[in-house]
Length: 339
Length: 248
Image 1 (spheres, rainbow over the protein chains, first blue to last red):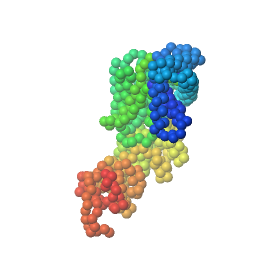
Image 2: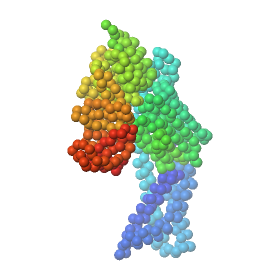
Image 3: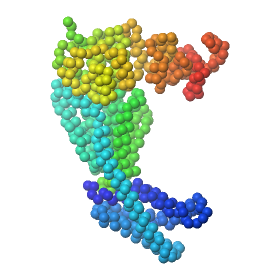
C-alpha cells in the first residue's frame, strides 16, 4: 500500500509551502552579498524582489507540473522518479529562461549558463531537503505508533471493564460473554499495526463496541447521541482517531458526574473534508490529570504524519460542553499518503 | 458474636455487585449497605453502625480519599479498605504508608485477608493521602461525634478566630478546627484573601464600600469593606489586600 512512498507528496500543500519557503531563504542568501560596496537592507530587498520575480514563475510551473504528474511518478521506482523530477525541473527552467531572454530581456550566454547551473544546484538542494524531511518522519511514524499503543487505552478502563465482566458472570452470563467479546475485538484493533488508513465505518463499529463496554459499567449515566449525516461511502481515516476521544469524553465528562450525561458524536462531510465532532459535558471541577492532553497530542501527531498541514484538530468549550473537532481531507487513499 | 458489618462504596453498580458476591464467598461478614459516592456513604454511616468500609477511589461528587478524610471525624471511625482499578500514584502512596488497598478485579482470598486485618485510617496516613484527593467539594464539621457536610459552594466566607475558623453560610455558621492557610491553599480558586484573618468566596462578593471603622486598632479611620450577597454583614479589607478590590 505504501510503495515508493519516498517520493514526496506533491499534492500536499505542506510540501509546496515548504519548497516555497526554502526558495525564499536560498534567494535571500544568494542576494545578501552582491559584491558592491555600500550594502544596505533596501538594496538587498530590491535585489531579492528582482531575482524573486524571475525565479518564481518557473518554480510555480515546476510545482504545478509535479502536482499534475504526481500520481504517475509515484508509481515509478524511486531512482527513475527522481530523474524525472530533476529533468522536469531543469527542462521547465530552461524553457522559461529561453522565453525570458527572447521576449523580455536578452541574456548573454554566460548568464544563461549561470542560471542553468543555479537551477541544477537548486533542484538538488530541494530534493535533498525533501528527502531529509521524509527520513525525519519515518522513525517518527514507528515511534508514534508505539507511543499510541501505550497511551491509548487507560489501564483504568481495562481493569474496570474486566471487573464489570466478572461481576456479570454469575448473574447474567450472556451479557458477560458479549462484554468479553467486545473487549477482545477492541484489543485486537489496539494491538494491530495501525499505520494504514481504515474505512470510517470500521472505526465507528469499534467505537460502538467501546461504548457498549463503558455502558455496562456506567449504566444509564452514559448516554450517546450519534449523528451520522450522509457520510460518503468508503471514506478512509487514520485508525483509532475517534476512540481515544470518546474515551476522554467518558473519563473526563461522564465519570465525574453522578447524574451522568450525553456524549454527542457528529460526523458529516464539510466541503471536500470530513468533520468529526465529539462533545461531552464539562467536568464539575477542573481536571488536574494530564491524560487528556496526552491523547490529544497523540492524535495531533498522527494527523500530522498522515496529512501534514491538511488536517485540523481543534478543542474548545461552549455551552458548558467540551468539544473536540477534527477535519480531515477526504481524498482517495493513494493521494493522502505522505511519508 | 454478630458478624462485622460492611459498607460498599463504589459508583459502578456492577462493581458493587461483584464485591457483594465476593463478601458472600468469604463468609462471616454482613453487607450493611451500598453507596454510589462519598456523600451517600456519610449519610448511611450516620444512621447505621458499620465496622468496615470498602471504598473506591475515583467517584463523582466525593471521591474515596475525601470520604476517608471526613470519616476521621466520626467518634468511632470505621476501618477502611480502598479499592481501585488502576491508579499508579494511589497505589504508590498506599504502599508507602501501609494503607490497605485492593486492586480490581479483586480475588476473594485477597479480600478475606484484607478484611481480617482492616484498620481505621491513622492521622499520618490521612495526611499522605491528601495530595491524591481530587474532590474538595465539602467541608466536614464535627459535632458531637457526627460529621456534618457543608458544600463548599454554600460557604460565603471563612474567618479565623483564635483556634478555630468560622465557616459562614447564608443560614448558619459553623466552627472548623483547621488553619486558614490550609483552606486558602485548597480553595484558592473559589476564595480570595481579604485580610490576615479572612477569606471570602469570590462568588459571594456583591461589592466594596468605604466605611468608618467603629472598633479595633484602627477605630475612627475609614477603610474598605466587602459587601456579601445574602447577608447584611461586612468584612474588613486590610490595606495589604486592597489590590483585591481592583481585581474583582
